[in-house]
Length: 170
Length: 170
DNA sequence: TCATAATGTTTTGTATACCTAACTTTAACT
DNA sequence: AGTTAAAGTTAGGTATACAAAACATTATGA
Image (cartoon, rainbow over all chains, first blue to last red; front, side, top):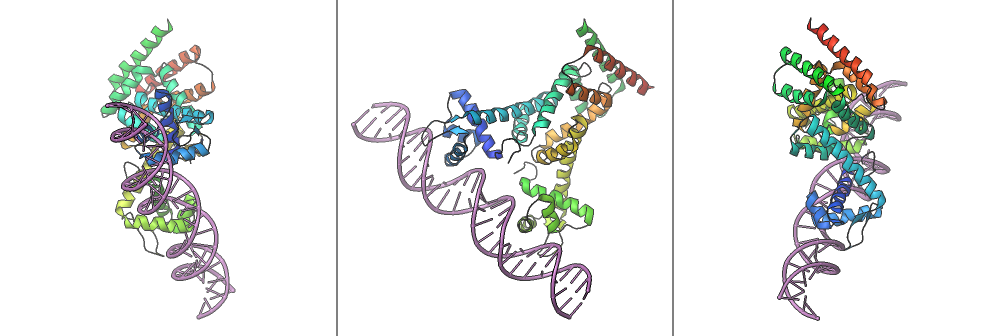
């Protein structure tokens, strides 16, 4: 049970892929859902019944599948959590795309609203604060591969920071 | 199944609390494990059998419970993941202690090794980089409560940064 | 030491989430 | 329209993880 939606991780994943498929193909089909989630067709049917009962999807046997308003809202929220986490992993921590995607997929069910919104703000802050920004992120990658802090590098780095700040001000 | 340990989230949690109880009381007892995890005594017995079979704990009916070498290694690793995440949430994102604890508890099962180590490095970087550090984190909290970036604040902030850097150098 | 409380175990049952395989419906093509 | 393939469903089975309640063992202390 995930705090925000009241749904299991598994059901959250179903809603998330149904949204993706809806956006790609107007409607979702059981086969594609199964393929995306790596589960068998039979398992999808059970999940769909469950989600239909709870009012998250429009579904009847052999019908197409669409999200209800309620389901759409939750699916969008999960997709948002995913996107924020992936953004952080990819563009701040500089994790490789595949790992970032997979880890975002796991963590999206574990993060709470407060932390998520704080993370959004944090990512924003890093990009906009003149003390950090893109060159600072680049310097982090460099720091990751080096053993320790290098005074000379720091001197240069601060110079760059000041130069960029003055340039942007004018 | 969590990538690193091959254990379910639930079993990881059992190992984690067994470690905590071992550290506090030398040995763990089923009742305390249940209390810490919020599950019934009967459920604990089942989990213990499972963990014993897999060689993570020393356990026989009515006996005390201790971690095996193998179990200890994994429990320590989970505790480490927890500590890193909590540190990030608490001391970087400035999440309140209770939420930080709970979210670390959920996310510790979702994070992969690569991301974890990168996060460790990132936390370290923020503390040590002269462009960030403690005053920068404080400024983030301020940014969170304000609507937008304030040029004058930025000027001051950069001044502080330079002053601190020069002071630390000498 | 013996009664009682605390702790631990077993059994039975529930819920989730999958699988496989047989079967049904729908879609596509001739 | 009829055949066939693809997609969807159903039924039966597995594994995990929990609860509740009856039962067993251990610990406590009078």
